[in-house]
Image (cartoon, rainbow, N blue to C red):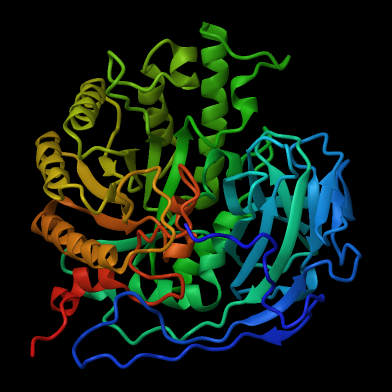
Length: 535
């Protein structure tokens, strides 16, 4: 990776707090007719709205969060001390600078004081509306040392007005002091959405083409891109248990409703994700009335089922048939276990998979008959996972569970054989269930732990070829697929940017950080664009 300067320079001309400035725009290169630029976006001029570098000798708007204290050290850096909890850190108010539907870049440099052991830090925005606070990650856990500055940069936007917005630094586990410098808040200059053949139209005769989104993607330019190219939306995180019912008996549909309302206004179908999952489920689900963990017992099994039934009934009452399909259970298969099932807390309380059948029967009773019920999982293209999922669905059908279909997530990489997914689709045809691709993205990393210093242009071209081959496999099986859904609208919002490690240059989707079509788009629509014209 490039060496980070000992003291990072701010984009401003001087080391003073800057409230309004403009960055210089780059020039656009000439491109031969008929050939698409695959690695660069159009020129742009972003607006620098706020910058702090502590050259004034003051904290320049930064305050301690929780028990933390902040002070400017002799080298004009912000030193954060006195942290007694991981969320303690330094915060700066950015409320006055953010508008609904506008995308921003938030960047800061972090390091540890000399002698401190390496640890993971992250940056977050606290968004307050009335009495409710939401915590939205900007840059997820990233390793920081005492030897060099580490850049934390991420894209952020809001979909509704907020009473207060605070950008802050926190840690994953350590309570060590933190050094902070060179913070910038930049308004991203949005290019026009390209006049391209809409993907939803190109694929209309094959299957419904969808996209998983969060509320910021249904306002501003991202919303324009979404409506142009996609015919279905999945609520990425906003229908998961922790979002819908964070506290027992307290339901919050507001964020999910933003997405649903946008979809309906634009004639789009809606996919629900997800009713039962081992992850992103509040701890209270698995605690008894005294706060003790649930155990394998009839009483606790009954309690867990009552909670699930209450949860599902509330969702069904709110959405009815507006959501045409649901991932009822998510990621319950584990081929490494002897029985092929994930031994989650659900599994432990029930002593086996009986909860899966119960979940489908609860969902069938709650939702209108025309709402389809799916089981969803990743890596179903691999033979071991494919076999375990096949056996589970076959058993559920034999037991009378109302499983309408299977969702293949299809989180793949640009080197994985596209034919594998086709083989799985062919196999599940034997069960007579509906099938769909629920969470498609194509990583350009050679392995999950790879964090690229930049996105190699040749990998974007290779990714374009991969999308070409993959969509050939899918379109050949169009009669077996209800829909194909991308897991994210554009690269900057992809979950792969922060999982399983920080990967700021991962680029798994069809559109880049500036909402422009990549080689991946042309691989689907017109693969001839992937090669330069011959002389």
